Length: 334
Image 1 (cartoon, rainbow, N blue to C red):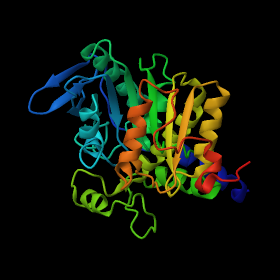
Image 2: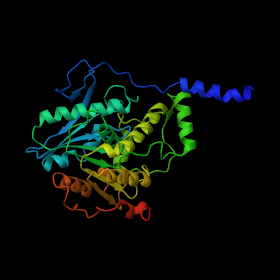
Image 3: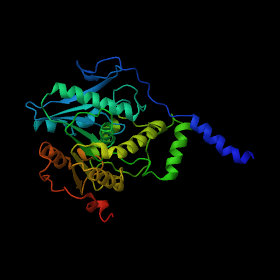
Image 4: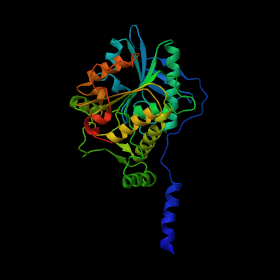
């Protein structure tokens, strides 16, 4: 009899445990932008999210930029696209999302709902700061997933479109069942245990100098808590589910050499967007890796983005626009 009830008892015990979530305050403040030695977006609970602003002299559009997992707003500084966009008349504002960079709760997971609400709040501030200008969300990897998740809020951000660079849409539906079970269990038994990724033969970019700079940067997270990784998978799942609710033009960028986000997940996302009659422009770069915005061929990606903004119906300058199923590892997918 004990053999019958032991698995049930163990399951109940694990279900009673939970990954640690970042503590957040009540919404008692009016969101605002502070401009001191460091610009910050102050959220309704008082959390201050550092901002990097690359302001064009005569802006024609504004980008709210969302960084990838374990990274922070500095990813949009050189060799990232912020300064280049400013020279093209596009103001780029990058924030440190909660749990990353110099934002509150370094290393802890804030929850996809809170992260999405932060995006909506900052977007509203930028609408007020730059009245009359088109406003877009641009997200890299995890940042792309947060942008997608934000569009599923009851009060989604008021933006003109989304630019998704290798969005993290590899959720539970794509995760190997065994690995998913291990992650679920580990997030409850050892949530604060950390993983480094050392020993993995995965190249996120061909820009080796940039990767070395990330390794030296003390603000970039090198050891990831298991409960934070668990939260990331949940976010990716929510982003994939949110695709039909976006309802704004989307530019989706993917590299044929991406070893992080599976090609099938990207193709599935494009299909879900198209099925919801969302205007989607997709591009696959044969020599592109996961970190397209900072790869060695990054400038052709930047040029495609700049051309798409305000002129989404025109072909992309790179010529890499087309059906993702016919590019790189997606070729031949049914």
